[in-house]
Length: 328
Image (cartoon, rainbow, N blue to C red; front, top):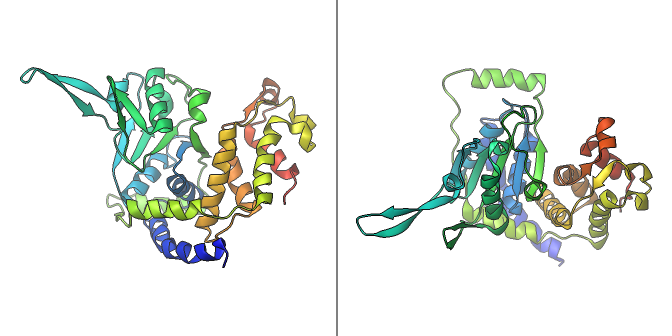
């Protein structure tokens, strides 16, 4: 019996709990199935996710609803220009009665952290969040404190209103496993949103999955089989963003300033495994890789001024890469 055959019963055992989460979230969210699956993907893959979209597309609602469906800790921080690092991670407080200092933990000490409008935070706050996202720890005074496990940052940002914002530095953007662009709903979906939400009484979301089940899902997803040919395909996609000419993409040489980092290769493999897991398969297919590649790579490929002058985005260039690189 192969490893894949051994994994299939375990995937089938966990699948009902994952489906229950989808169903609970669907009580509130209409459509947006890709966004919900990407949120679950980030949770299972132990990666952070950045949601970008104009106001009113249920970015905050989706994260809050997911948190309600999970029996775990949740904090929401509204990022503003006057926010201080201490407001996020906590601070030391002097107690005159006992003449000593105590540490007051900030809202970052939770399992799911909703960083709402993250690009409104100043650089000092962003750097404090950077340590938490990468190292899963924060420093208060001279002491370092571990964050709970799981720890997941779900951040939102508004792409159209740039007044009073601080664009995220590339080093921080690269810490997000996925960047998801949230689009308008379809007409029939918006009609259902009207019927469901244009009333005082709102749907109630129940807690249907535990932290232990999520950690178990992580173990199973991590064991998903990746064939060496699929591994080569993942590496080829990332290298095509750095050396397009090697993959018959000479036109992209002047359109890409910087390609994806090795972190992209790692995250693309991890996301592909979870995609296979969510589909109920114990192995990764090239289609799994292609389906998650835009969300993993779009914020890691920096386009040139020439590309911007032609109104080309990283998504456009990635589509060319996905259409051209040979699929095993």
